[in-house]
Length: 372
Ligand SMILES: [Zn+2]
Image 1 (cartoon, rainbow, N blue to C red):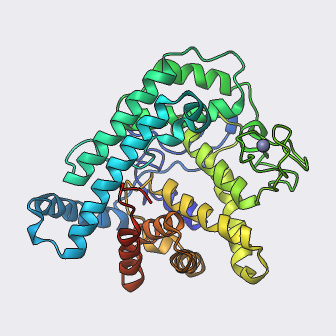
Image 2: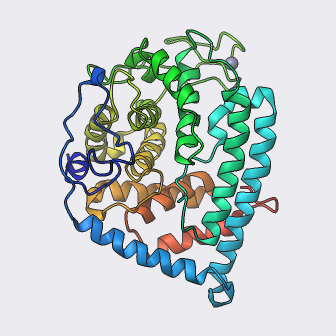
């Protein structure tokens, strides 16, 4: 409810309908989805005040990006780690995009999902934008030049949607292919895209994870038909996590998917509340995916780091959940989970020793090639 209200009262401009005509909102959804609930005028709010501070901070950070001599030694190491990480992403990403099998399997996951401002960047942001654009241009050249097969499977449509969304965000979109994609999506149902229908059911126990060999495993199967590995049941939080991100792209691109971002967010919010009341009884796999689902609520509500979120959007148990998972990740020396939890906690205003310690862990655990 708090998240819906924040979108409603314009505290998340750009994601709130009617708040900024130049940026498509998450909602209202296309008519099929029937959701025009979140239409209100944007008010000057606490968020805007916050944004003002952020802009000043941005101006300051631009000014201090040269020279780096004024930075503390930790800040200098962090700065160097980000540049090395971006170089690693670029070289690995370009190699993956040039490989047919990897392109087919990972597709648009290879692109940078995070928001990068197209103007007034800091030095690091300019580097990130260059990397994002090089990867996106190669993906576009390799994927968008081919004709979309008639009746492409939903999995392929979702990958294409994710890639086209990234191109749109970088200002190098393909509007013709977006239209073709929207037409094909119109023939599909919410279950085709999300593995369940968020309007009338919860994710089912019959759902299986994608096999390590890359094959989709049939609902209820005991083994993978392609490689005979044992099938693994999907955590419902994993199903919601995927659905949330897919629906985010669909709603932002105004492509009907049979259910919208808010339908999934609402279910997920109820499940967070239930899980927060019974954390001890939650299986560890569900706790793991719950953390990733929560980070993706932060990512989608912030348009993948375009903006900080008001701290009061996240009730103490949810914040605590991210804090606990960050502590677990640090203990297990898991840079992926540590990075996501750290990023999202910072996005909702967390500061202090835990944040500093997690940043230090990430810088210290970077490999010589810039990866982790
Ligand atoms: Zn398999």
